Length: 194
Image (cartoon, rainbow, N blue to C red):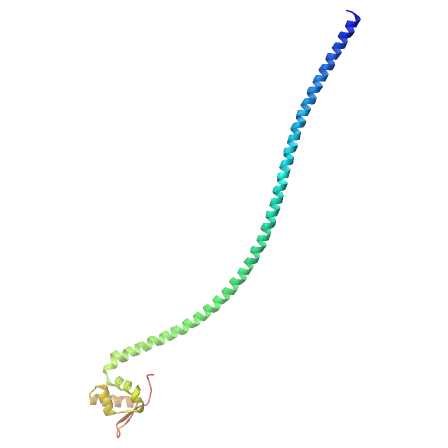
């Protein structure tokens, strides 16, 4: 082989090495570029996620501020309702106290009413057959205010004259009637019925 051939072959061999080196380097550059592209995509995705998180963070801050404002409003309303409740509770206690007082008075009144009902029942149903009650009723009326004679009471009561005379004496002795034997006038001394 000639020296030129050797030189060309040697150059070619060197070129093959250089070409292999260039191809290896190009492949490495391509791999690095692929990695860089993937890294760029990752960074872009990361930036998008960061932007999304910042947007969400702003939305959460706005929502937090709105909730804080709503909390303050609700706290104010709650304080107002508590004040209103306290006022209503005081009114209720006052009304309850008045009601108890009225109820106590009414129970007393009711007891008196029941007692009066009992007396009226006794007077009208049980003792009405006796001339004593009938005479007292007659003298409590408008005509009896000035007094009545024994004859008028006999006629108005419907009882026998002897029963009327006995009842007049009983009532006069008890202090309910005044009886003038000479004029036969009977007057009411003690008012029982209104």
